[in-house]
Length: 356
Ligand SMILES: Cc1ncc(COP(=O)(O)O)c(C=O)c1O
Image (tube, rainbow, N blue to C red; front, side):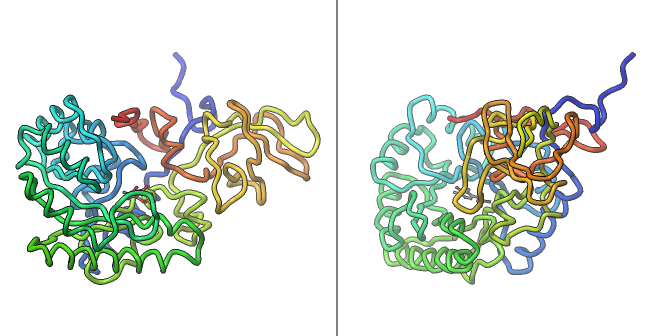
């Protein structure tokens, strides 16, 4: 009988998680936010795994954030009952039917940033009083969200259609512009939420929840913020290191890969290409990831099953097992069915593929 593969002889590429590091990251974030009176609602689109979300819950998360109704469905089926879908959605009849069903077993919040979106939500839902609405505001990322001063009028519109308002939210994604942008983005999030909260008050509506957060800004959020939604912090990646938001020893997930060719001078090639690392470039760093074991070795080019690493020294021989710290872990996790662990069974990425 063959013995199960070890980390050393398992076929590559695979996604490796260090659970001790992930748990430490979960604990540090939860404790730091708790000390500042901010509740933690991690964005689980980073790992899409009910097992990892359970660890976050045990270590102090007060609820979870997801990106899609399908993700909400998976987490609710696994026993999570307090879920925020943190973006505007366009609600079709089948989406509304699912939301109606899900509100039977969970507290569900949903993001809105337009009158048309709110209208479709209110028209399609049969149990509209069972869902809570969060008005999204733009604090500087310029992706989605109304101007903070417009939060009140939109909240009033929601109320007039029978929808309940929980509060306002923003994502300080402009923190990813560079290490010098993080503190400003955190301050922007806090200030925008305060303005939005006042706008709601001016319209006679209380914003109970002021929700902010990205991984770089979560620990710098100012007073008034009641909830933070970091996601990447659990696993970390090359961008978080580049932003000064994580150290290399806080990276909990890497792509294990092997050298498959040294034939072309000045480089070597590993078996992790765009289908293992993504082809996502970053304004913060060159290439697609760096090799943890080899100083200065960056995956500079990818084709689907090849990661090309420019290298002037003697390349590691074919068959060498290496580990790449990818640029952006959320989109890398999205390519895999499971996390491989050192000591326990693989962890299924069970909410993967739920785009709607
Ligand atoms: C709305 C929203 N909230 C929270 C997050 C989590 O931020 P991060 O990936 O920096 O942890 C994201 C990430 O894209 C997001 O879009």
